[in-house]
Length: 428
Picture 1 (cartoon, rainbow, N blue to C red):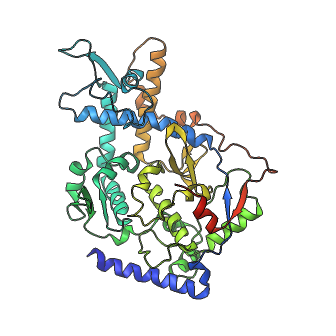
Picture 2 (cartoon, rainbow, N blue to C red):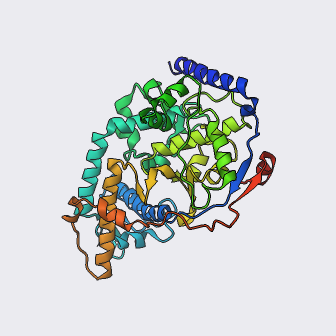
Picture 3 (cartoon, rainbow, N blue to C red):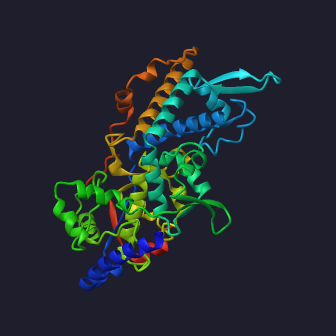
């Protein structure tokens, strides 16, 4: 049973908390001096988010065409989809922008009604994507299990999962193609508000190791991880500060205090922790770090996380953590939305360890960009031979190399704040 296993897990975190609090009572209180850091634009990550917005819209439209009983979509049927797809202009214009993916033709009965079906190139790419889903099905199942294991009720509304399926690398119609294959692990249920949801039916102890724990376990300095398992030390989050921050004494002192706090796994019961304590704040950072680690692009929209706030046991104003810890997260305001990125997942404008599905999506983008070039010359060409090439090198050169806007070292990049001031002034 899930709860029997959870009792064993909660006992370990209780031991960690009790041993920590016995040596220092400040863990359950707010005594760490915090520094409010100014937001700094990261051009390379903003460029990736801008690129992925069109890529995601194209892939969602591709899946919608596949689901259609007619094998095509009319311009009228998608006229109000632009917000759903994250676009700021009409979907018809988007279709016509990428002729290498979408073939336009007139409706059989209504000659003035544009229709769109997939090109041979798009179908070839989709076939490659389906092969990847089949090959890495166990990896996808594990990722879905981990997400549900982080929820208080081990349940998520299907609506929330559908919003996250692009980020989590779930196949289209996963509730029909993936979930039924693992009936011992998942159950379809009704959530507390009556919505259809997916519940974890079986706890997997082997999945309850976070990405940060795995990283420390695989490092050469294994003694630190072994001491952590005995409750004798903490795990430190990788930090990558914008220019001008990392060398400042007050920032370094603050981060050193934060890193020394015990690390609480996002898969462990946190109900015994004071919700207003520094320890709970580090636990919240750990939950967000793990959730972003589970996404294949190491990023997601802030609103998706906000809808899961209660299930993840996050504080009401948890979104302020993204700007408070710029060495761990980056909050982008690109494309008229707010996207949260795990900074350690990227290096010089590229994913450090891209999932095979990400590589296939890069091919989609390569074909889309090629279509734009041909369209600008008044030509419509479907470069099927191009997509068989390795486009990773081309994608990397397209990324902006400047990581952050430079900040003068003489400028004040921080200000000291108290917990009371933050609670009064920070808004979601």
